[in-house]
Image (cartoon, rainbow, N blue to C red; front, side, top):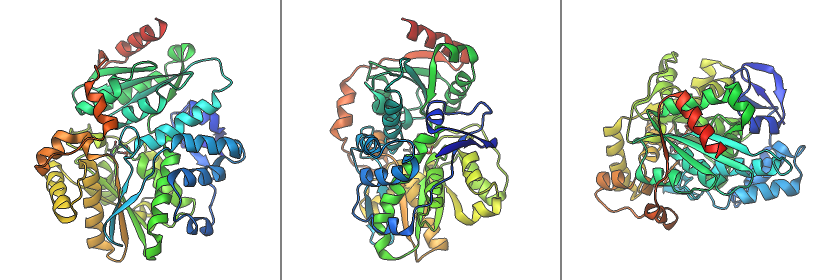
Length: 437
Ligand SMILES: *Cc1c(COP(=O)(O)O)cnc(C)c1O
């Protein structure tokens, strides 16, 4: 499979090139071509398969020409050491696709771990250390840091907005040590993202370091996220109903991944783009005008994005045709008060404890089903474990939330980060210092 730039569709690069240089020189975004079309029989026989099994099967269709079947099996089974089950809240009607059973308790483990496995596969013969730069609004950093921790030949620098991630999220970024360095930026997530973007186009920096990204702009983060939509389909197809997914969205990587796998043949009837008060895309779906804005801080902070970096991909997947897009995707958004009420209602109605992002996804599917599609099975993506937002969830639900042990051990470790202002030059300087020892 080849990868083209959204700014230059006639120009393509190899999988290895797109993996290690996540952004094309022309500042477009890589997209896979041609997307293989999986036969319907494939989707009919996946009912009992795990994420790793499905990831392996789909990877063969994607990369079977470039990577041996044996290597693909190793890559997928190394990456997917956990499953992504659907939990039904209302049988045959509403379910949640739990994506938080990986090491960092969020869906970004799926993309980060697949990408880490692929990078370590491709870099087996290389001498030069790869340097991953990643900006995080909360969860990406933890997933990437844990996915790459102790992976030989790879070093990771994570930038996060100071004071805008939860304590446990911060611990995930700042306590691993070894090949993982955290930069605490006095600014917003958008500032962190801007710094990373600038680093990738800084010729001097790229001469010294072999820079690579693990942000959702890297197409290899998105590709494996399609696998769990397939996994969920396998679990609910026996109802014989149309299937609608609601994806709590920030940078819109997760939703784009779903659309890609739909275009590979997965019978998904419709998507719901569910957001918090940063409702650029739902507003676009309503009005046809795409107007980026500075991000607003909310309680679902992993979705605080004012200019979603994957919107271009999403639009591209529908031929940049607005009518086509609105036929396939509906948008819903909820402010913090509505999110709190939603978390309470979901707990009261189903006994299900949802993190604020997941609650937005569930509200989105409930509203869409009741307004538009009562005969469908609706599945909301549960993007993070509620204990990642423990103080908030406990305050909203008035009950204690248990933290899985793989996360609770972190709270006893000591934080280590480099504090910098929201300024590219400051980052560049301190990055060069950390790598030159
Ligand atoms: C990153 C994240 C999102 C948003 O995903 P995008 O792919 O950026 O749209 C939603 N929920 C949680 C918990 C996240 O970490």
